Image 1 (cartoon, rainbow over the protein chains, first blue to last red):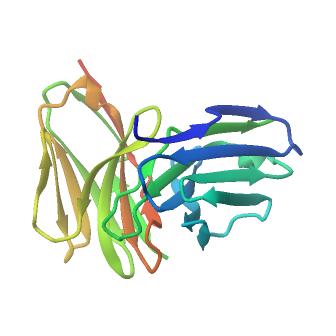
Image 2 (cartoon, chains in turn blue, purple):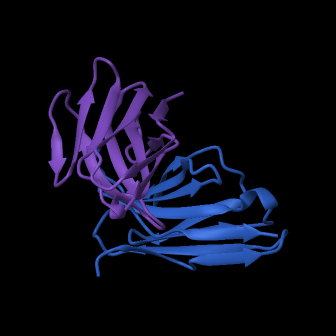
Length: 113
Length: 112
């Protein structure tokens, strides 16, 4: 199936640990994103990559580091996890035009205890 | 800072009812306004609106944009229980494509 897929779906970990979330898209898009959805359901952009190049880097703690090995993959590594990092993280992709809607993955629910 | 506000925050209706969801925005450098439906997982794309007054329609759902008054509405006619979801409005603009500013969403619950 053509889609944006991310793993794992659920991630439960303790404070201070380091974890990674992986994302892959087979839609042929050249831009990928990480969005964070907090407990109030607000979706906010964190990063975007176009053809492996970082384009958007919002005000995100530098404990969060995205990595894009190729244009079909965008991973998110989080160091020294904190309680406030608990959220649902969505990967998305689109073509690099203003009129191309984003297609989202199913999200990774991260719970930090 | 760009802002998108949706109303109502939640809505409970019965099957067959018609609902109107509202989205107002304050943005610089408007490019497009998007509607998404979020059930339990990924937000799924519904509509993208760029021009005022032109209705976009898909089945029982329709949406329109008013760039003068800075708002959009999403209409759902003859609602079904499967329409129960969070409906998200987002603005795409600024200088970076893909940077969507989302509203807080409207939680729609449709009872049988």
